[in-house]
Image (tube, rainbow, N blue to C red):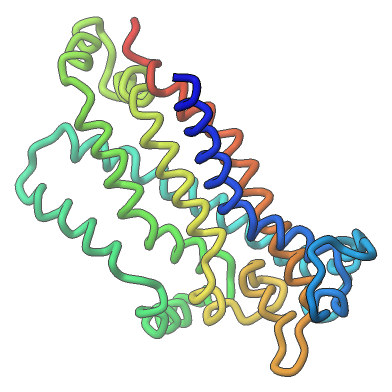
Length: 274
């Protein structure tokens, strides 16, 4: 038994190392000079550490990174909140109500997941020009919300459908309204689904590139995913800044997952006890 446990531990450590190696290489690369990154044969650890890359990259003339980071945070946060505001009631309604065309509606929800902003970017640009919202954060908030809404509806829908109806009926007999049943009884039971939808939406919005590249033309409005390409040229690439910006870009997502993961675990047992 002990040997099996040690074997599983060793396999887990090996798999974790395989997943972490690219991130470790990126972190170490962000602490090297460009010449050292391009050196042949390469060095794994920096011969001379350059933590100043993280301070100088904010003042580079290629792009206004502070504004790009702020744009990324605003777009991802507002789009995620908008998606959850619409998706949770929609998922609850489709899980509890048997209305005509329900199966077709859920099928269309999945079909829309196959569409990508890149395919519709020409139509989106024309629509935003007509509305006068081109090259604005509002445009990207709407795009990200629209293209992440289908997944955010489908996942909580499955969780709501798995909650026994008898629990809600008992709460209704106790005098709770439909809204109180949703917020005080059902939502705590489906927290894993809400957390999954939240993480998926945040990551998708945070990494969105194609639509932002076309719709946002002002440097200060562009997110980090687009700003990163400004450091990659045809004849020269500032690899130390590419690695540093990539490292900074993944930190907020890692922090979010670390914070929200507690909700994922607690949601598995909370909510059904009166």
